[in-house]
Image 1 (cartoon, rainbow, N blue to C red):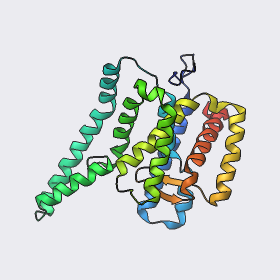
Image 2 (tube, rainbow, N blue to C red):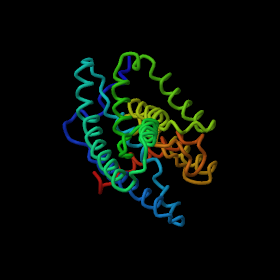
Image 3 (cartoon, rainbow, N blue to C red):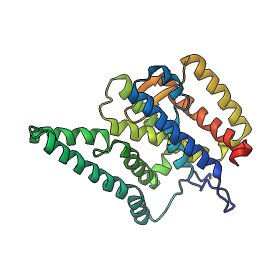
Image 4 (cartoon, helix red, strand yellow):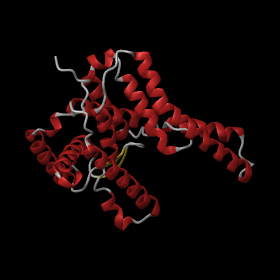
Length: 262
């Protein structure tokens, strides 16, 4: 039987630097998109969506390196140190800064305000420091998918993680960002597990080109779903999975065959 949790790294000990190049590119895209978004430079917004699949790529890439570990307690402890410890550390720093700023400049804020603030953060999946949502969601995904139950029902979990955020989007239930972006992360993480090697097959690449072209024609724009808030930025929401997956496959192959990045 196929081992869906097989280590996706090459059998040789040599590191695949192409993924590092793509990671750097996606980080630059993420920074660029936020700069354009917060600056209000609408004329530049179409260019900010060119690599709109940057967050799906990060989850996909993490899934590529998922390895099933039978030592559940040790695995949880390791992932806790790697993901939750920095999540808590930087969150506490941010919360202290926010609290000091509010006490100095907004002494009128009541206890009710702070309780509402905490509740809002819980729904968003972070503790003040917004970008840290990724660490918490990734930890939940990695720990959950390491269990035998997840291994047995991997495709049921996948389709649930696709359908539920879609229902949340179309029924306007997106205030629970923590649930939607964690589920979206699950879907791309599972695809990374399943496609870590097959994504480099010629037939998969050709199919991805066709799917990418189809999505562009149908959406008449780059498809961009902001995973954090499960909001549509451009294109058609229903095409998000097909579009993002085809883009991930294409860029992984494109960088891999480019001599500059090898």
